[in-house]
Image 1 (cartoon, helix red, strand yellow):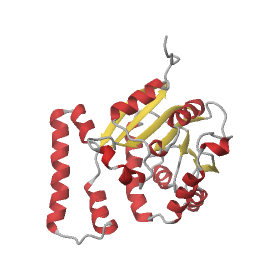
Image 2 (cartoon, helix red, strand yellow):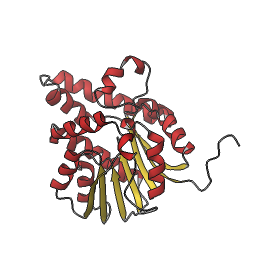
Image 3 (cartoon, one colour):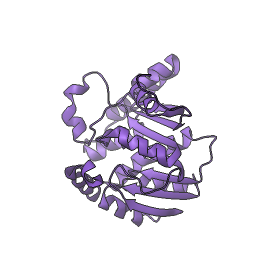
Length: 258
């Protein structure tokens, strides 16, 4: 039964993705994702950390380099992803396993923290995965891109090209988490950094480097950052490109129609 939950074409797509992945691009993205994890976890000390959907291991590599935790584990649906993780030589990485996308091969409350970074938007049955995370760990860090904006329904092909079958806002993610029995303890919004935008423009899209493009990228980021500082959390959530939360199991049971 577990074999049937994740579509075969989904596994094939991610196997091919990691086989063709661009190391520099993925490490650049991981640099900021890892920092977001560190930022929302300030004040906590986690011993056993599991990354679910660990991709090619770039986030765990950066967290390990920063001594985020003394013990790491990873699960990934892609065989090529597992190979990349194992090849990184991540310090204190104790296990790497292939999994079916929904069933974690661990006992209840096995981990202090689970990391789910830019995974939920790819998941066909998101609530099933969230329930499994809650079973295995007390705390979770979840980051999703903020894809849900005006006109999103006209960009379906764009998002599907990246494997994004779910779209979120900070509000919709909080609603999803709270209705699955999680309590959001800390959150943060983030925008795409100029360094990432420049790499995407000049390296990925092969646009010619020029001063005007650099100025436009820097100015847009500065203006949005200033607006967020002036108008606060609500504006930050509207301008954000990603949303990160540290959440934990809520004490009360979720009741429907009570």
